[in-house]
Every structure is written in C-alpha cells, then in structure tokens.
Length: 396
Image 1: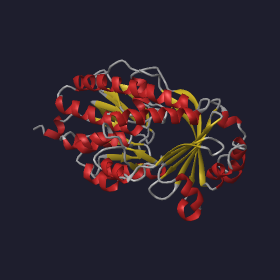
Image 2: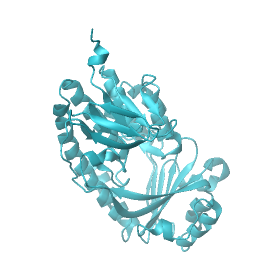
Image 3: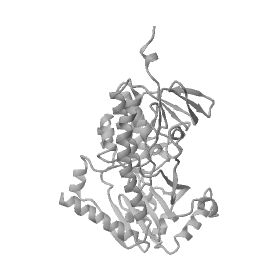
Image 4: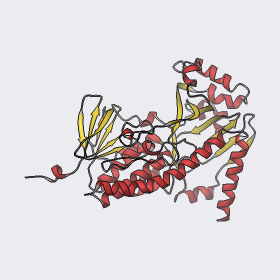
C-alpha cells in the first residue's frame, strides 16, 4: 500500500538564509514538505550581515503570507530611520530624522529595520523541526534522465530531488545546472568592521551616527556606518579596487590592529571623526568583494530546477533589495507551487517570468546607485537624488 508520504514529490532547497527559510515556511503552510540543506553545522545568521530594511511591497508581503507579520512588527525597529550623508570633510548634505508622526505612519508599512539574525530566528521558530539538515555542503548537482536531480554533498551523502531550488547565494552550486554564466566582480571592495556597544564606549561617535545610517562618500570611496539592534555600529569601509586588491594590498586581515592602521592610510585625508569608524572597530575585519550577475540575467528553463535570491540575481547592496527580493522570490515561487502541485514545470515557468521582470528592474536600480555612490561628487549627487525622491513623495 502506497502512503501519501511516498507519493509526495521531494523538494530540496539548498541554503538556509532568509530566502530559503521563507520558502520552506510558506510551503509548509501550504502543506508541501521540503528539505533544506545548509552547509554550516548550525545557524550562523547572527554572525553574517547587519541590519536589514524590510520593504512593504516585498519582504513584508512574504511575512504576512507566512503568518509572521505581527511578530515581525514587535521585533522590528521603526524608530531607526535616521540617515546622514556627508563628504570626507564631514560636511553634511542630508540629515534625515523622521518626525514622530512619520514614525507612527511607518508602523503600517514603510521600511522598518531588523537584524538579519533576528529575522532568521523568527523564521526558524516557525519551521517544523527536522526540515533543515545542517552540515550538508553541496559539492555538485547532476541532472538524471528521469528528470530528477542527484545531489552530492561533501559529507559523502548522495540524495535525489524531484525539484531542486538553489537559495545558495552568489556562488551557487545549483546555478551551473541552468547556465554557464557566472557572477562578475562589480569593481567594489568592502571591509566589514564592528564598533561594539557604541553608545556606551564611544558616545560622541554614536551621537554622530544617530539612530540609523551614516554614509561618508568622497574620492570614489566610502565609510558607511549602520546602527544594529544589539548596539553595535557595523562599518563598511568601501572603495573601488582591482579584483586582486585583497591579495596584493599587503594587508593581513587576520591581524585586525595592523590592518586598521593600514586601512586608515587609505582614508588618511578624511575627517578625524570619520576615521574613528575604523579606529574604534573591534573584533575581526571581514573583507569582501561585491559581485553581480548581468542585468536582465535569465537561464534556460529546467522543469526540475530553479533559483531564488542571490543565486538568481545577485547585485550590489545599494538599492537595499537583496533580502527583500529573496523573500519576494520565495513568496512568488511558493504561490506558484501551491497552484500547480502536480506540475513543477508550470509552477517554475510562472514564477520565473515574474522574477525576471522584477529582478531586472531592481538590478538596474542597484547598479545605478553603486555608480552614483562611488562616483565623483557622490555626497552631493546622492543628496540631490534623495531630495528629488522626497519631493515626489510629498506631491503624491
């Protein structure tokens, strides 16, 4: 006798980031079981990334569908919308501080902030135990003649899936099943630092950073400060550089104090308070290159394989869309699968058409923002652009 569990087609999600978790939770709510394979031995979301703006039209929609919106509202920070833009001398071009009535209005939408780890905890607590298999790093995926996909993991496990969904980021191991196109270096390198307990240890800098973000932009470089929910200021020292710069710079990033001294040389003619964002940083320095897929990137359709999030459309972080698009992808794919439980190919087709259109628009916005943010006269031009946007909203 065949049971329902035996008849159920197997859906595998690679990657337990916000996109993969959102997808699994939505499918769980629709009665469609999945398995998430995560390369790490345990959840690492609290050690990766900083504060996220969750957008009303995308990330919040997914949370509403997942039944987590009220819990999200209780955890989100609606009051941390301050935004300051300065140049390397400290001259202020934008000093945005929402008024109480604006904060009250934002409670019904807007772009509230939440730390990445807190968001993942919110999703994890709602997902059925056993859904995630930790310590499963995908080495390769092989298409089989019967339409299924064979998954080979570095722990020696080999498993199969009727539907494989790559939610495994910029360097996806699933993407090669669909295309030969790979990510490209955007020309931007960022060094992530952390100022811990900023308000207590460095009150003057915390007051300067205020309750949100500070962008110091000049000379095709930037020092970006972002207040996180745990009281740290996450800092991104950013600049255009050759792809090989991390290897050829001579900076030992595993020696934080020495690395900070060398990093300060790169910003040597910047305002002293801005350089404090580097001086006061503690703990490790995380170097990262910013990658992107071509704007309008598409792949050859496969009825048993698709991608969401950065695996599908990685872009620079300067449109604030990364996590929101991953969650929106999860929402659209989950809805398509719920409508077409017996035809994964049809579901994938419906999802991918929507995703391509949405992601191409956001990728273009992201690239334009990157070029502006690290171009000439960046502080003045970014301020001008934002003032134009504010005026347009005021007229609506």
